[in-house]
Image (cartoon, rainbow, N blue to C red; front, side, top):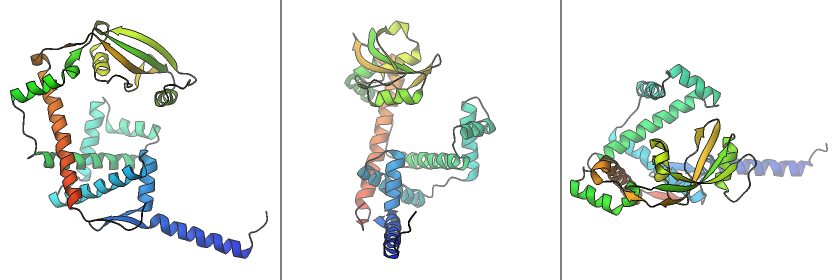
Amino acid sequence: MKRLPAIFAAAFLVAATAWGGLVDAVSIVVDDEPITLYEIYKTEHQLGLSKQKAVEYLIKQKLKKEELKRLGIQVDEFDVTNEIEKIAKQNGIDSLKLRAIMAQRGVDWEDYKKQVKEKLLQERLYREILSTKVQPPSEATLKEYYRLHLDRYSIPEAIEVIQYSSPDRKALREAIANPMAQVPGVTRKPETIRADQLNRQLLFLLTQTPRGHFTQVIPAGGQFVSFYVQDFVNPHPLPFEEVKNRVYADWMEEKRKEAIKSHFEKLRAAADIRVLRAP
């Protein structure tokens, strides 16, 4: 193999050095907290986001970090260990077995602990934010919410679906991402399923999936299955008293999301955000 002439080799070295500096360069500063071009690139590819959404995600992460510091919210090793033991117990195993399962899936244990810590920090932050922002609803408020969202609390006589199934989870996900494509190993089967023939969990899964959408992938009899919901046949609402707890949970979740979104929108508006280099 021929060696590059010295002038080309030098030019290549300069370009590589410049690129390395560019990757590490600061793109945005959020209240003196830098976001580099590399962070944006990494977030785009790891989370499958557009460049703009990656930037917004990172800005929000910086704002979260500031709020955690301002409110004095911390999570230590003891908290993380307790949470991992709790997760393991909920799955009928101990933390050692959980660690072994993570290793089989190629998940680094320290990375997993970091994820658990981030989850705990976010939960505590959101709890603190929401403590004074969301008050329990009145009976009248719940009934009005129920009336406006009757479709959520209705049971159809039957559900028209297309069942997608495959022994290969990856192939099934590919078919879900490209419903019109013929993916090898994936079987499609149009069905009209009577609601009274479904178990409670599957009925809930199907009725909570909007028309024109896929359910989550579920394991069933050695296969992986997802249902594309086409239509609900003759839906009828359940009595308010029967679904009152669900209505309450849905209302609270909606208000929590609104409050969190509003809180961070205000933080973003008040933050000193400077773009030093376009991402």
